[in-house]
Image (cartoon, rainbow, N blue to C red; front, side, top):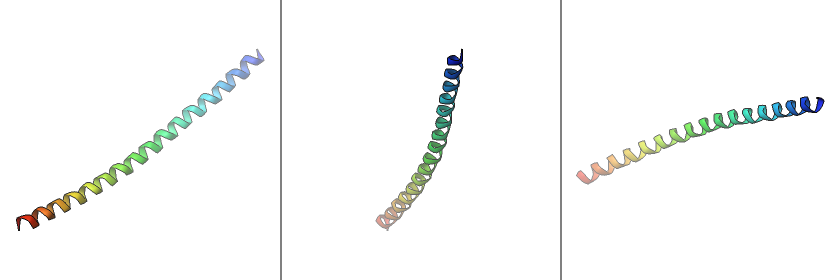
Length: 60
């Protein structure tokens, strides 16, 4: 019976670590991709500005 109790405690600890790591990684993923999206929006705005400027120069 002692063996089963020790095994169960070990499994509990392993599952706790797995769940904690999963939550931590999902949180990091959310932060990283949010930053990537902001950078992409900034780049798109710059490209749009350059495109508009080139269009004006070609028309003028």
